[in-house]
Length: 502
Image 1 (spheres, rainbow, N blue to C red):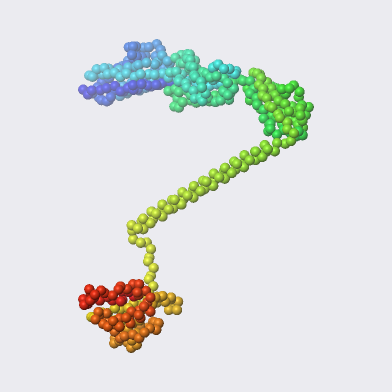
Image 2 (spheres, rainbow, N blue to C red; image 1 turned 30 degrees about the vertical axis):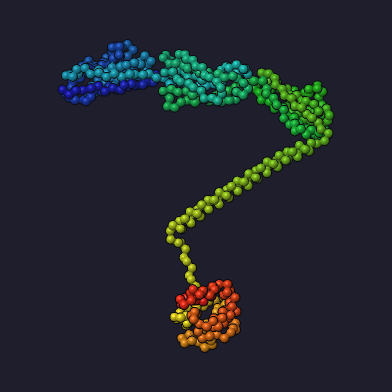
């Protein structure tokens, strides 16, 4: 035969006075197993309910009558219903709480059992209230929170900004098996405690969320008095000067009394409840005023010294204006400083960004398009000038560089002197020479020779004549020229070109 088992819940919760079901099933349902009886009993072996296919339902316990207990499906006329032995409780009582065993008598598997714990719970009723107390220096309860009729007992805590503590007590609830929890919040009832709000927090397993109950504390205390209105500028002849008696108390004040420390009350002063009005300040006002306030708890008082001046106190007003001016100046200076800081930070940020962009530009190809170069006048080649330097040497001369886009009149001519060519010095051009445009003006000089030779074997007269000519047309020639070669170089064919000095 196939093995079978009993399926039940480990724990079932039911509300006090409500209805609850204890599920019980024999699994798996099969025709090979025959059920002869289903029984529910408590852990102490006391039978609660039984069902037999031939004899029907039986409730042997006196408190477990058929009005309170019933099989949900077994015994409804169908044989298959024997596999479901769910038991229902109505009018749940505290005495119903406990362990219950669901038992199947089968063939050929024998007896199969399952145990369920039935827990009876009750939702409490919660309230919180302030306890009116009188001013004291000793701690006493100032608020109370009550959670009544809970099963199991509720848990109470306080949310408060005051320095206090909670004291808890328990007592039987209105229904058997229930508990009432009372928590009292204790603190020193000073005047500052009056009007403060604290919160009672109640937690219970029947509640989805904690219950929060705010409480506003009430402390009875004598009046706390202060006087305002004196500005240290009471002078002779001042009109409509006022003093105000400020009071904080619980309960409300029942009377105000104005007096002076000297016992003489100025005739120009009029009492209007908490206000003292002086129509015209005279010398009798130069005294100390006392305001005494009374309520149901006690009495409080405050004093104010008044100094009467001969003339108005303009220094005080100036000082006040100075303070205001300093305050405004400080605000302006702060704003200016903040603006300067913001500007500096913005400039630094822009510089960093610009530096980063420059680095990127250096790393990559240039992002700008180079300007189109201006067309230049091509430099014509000078014809070779023939110099007789032992062996012939050709040294082309360069012409000034002109910009083709600008007229010759707008361009400044070079400010230097050129040595005249051999053709200009001798008159006729040599063979192969050509003109290069406008002639270059050269100052008149001595007659020139047709060819120049630096051969060391030439006549000394011819060399002296050339040196005199160079000194006249170029005064820096002597400063740049080297002395004549020494006798040790004579006969060695040492040649120095004058072109390097020009």
